[in-house]
Image (cartoon, rainbow, N blue to C red):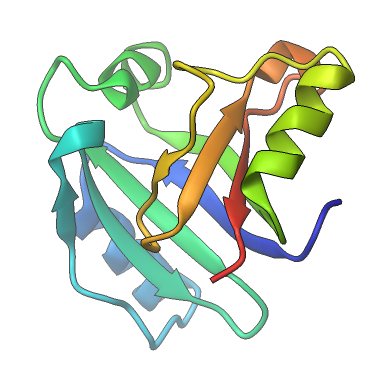
Length: 136
């Protein structure tokens, strides 16, 4: 079921400061423009790597789920990892059949790459919030 690692989500209090870190400290050269995903309450910016991406996520306001994460981790940090799957519905059903909890309503929603996504509860994934994304 699991496909390639698509991205690592990193919560940040400032996308601009994080972009500077990835560019100036680590030498990232392909950094996309910041855009809003109001339905998820976040600003998003992708940093391309040779084999994957970093998804920088910043809360739009204090009601964002990412704002809660930043209250516990004020400097930011790894928020989730995202794996590609061929069929998001089949992947969801398989995860539920294995006892994993899908966050939210359980129905896929459209993610930052424009494809359906779901999140699996970190307590069911060894403490890591896992996003499954239908392959673009």
